[in-house]
Length: 166
Figure (cartoon, rainbow, N blue to C red):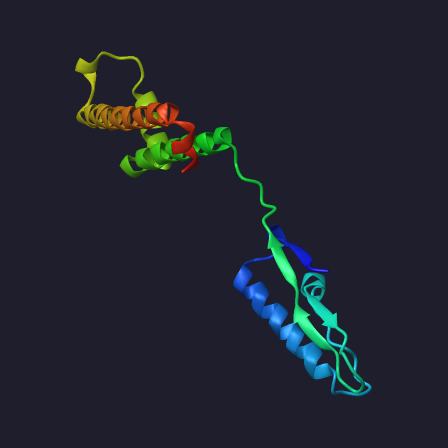
């Protein structure tokens, strides 16, 4: 009976095929030995090699690879794929913002701006003016990134199911 090997239980088909063939060859070589334990392998590999009884007297049995790999890996739904695209877009937005100013530098900037306190801009020192200018430049870049991200999100929402699945 042909063994049905779930695709989710093997790393890749080529490696599995090689392992099955190696085990089959070991079983064939074992036919000619005496008082030695039979070769063993992972249960999926062993199940994939079938013994074929010999026809006739004094002929050794044969061993053949007899398996089929069954794709049991569930396919993601359109909703799941669309959500994944949205998540990737949000991650891209966060990465792009971090390229402009790292999260640690953003935090430091906010803390330094908070220390300025409530006073009119005319009373800002040169250092404080530089901090405010840095914040304004950063926020301008962030808005551009957020607009690009929002456009990506709208495009993802507008995609047909076939486009999402492609």
